[in-house]
Amino acid sequence: MGLFRRQYQIRLHQPVTGSASTIQSLPSVAHQTPLMRIQPNDRIISAPLDGEIVALSPRHLTITALNGQQFVLQIETTDYHAMVDWQVRIGDSVSPLTILGLLEGSLTATSLVVSRVHAVSQMTKAVVTNS
Image 1 (spheres, rainbow, N blue to C red):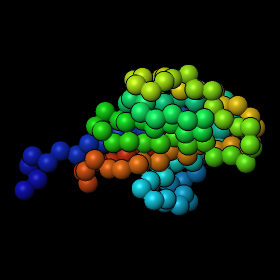
Image 2: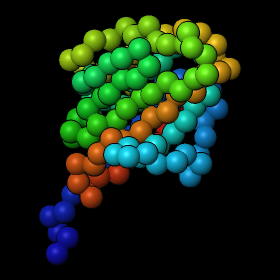
Image 3: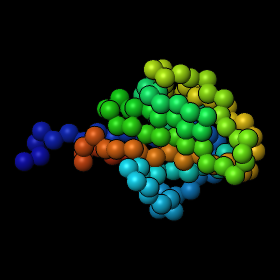
Image 4: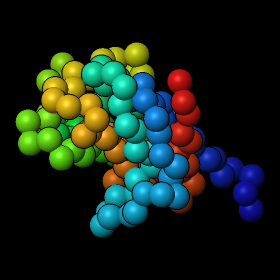
């Protein structure tokens, strides 16, 4: 009986301007489901969804969404010096209008990958939007 079943939908926004790869072209890794890969045209990184910053390193950031689901924004690069100057700290609340940080290094050798870490329930979906 599905009368009281509720389906949650999370909207993911593109965190940087650039060209995005399709979900099917990204391989799954252990405990993570890649949702989008973006080749950036700009150095400004915005939050892909509403949530709270729970982990931070020079090349990745973890956000817990409002429903408890976790997403990782990871910088993939062949440039050893490429990293992010994060403008947020652990515990900060973010929205898609929040600037998370600035990319440093070569943009041509860098891509950003947004992945879902674990699902809260089978009834949760993530919808990728370009904005």
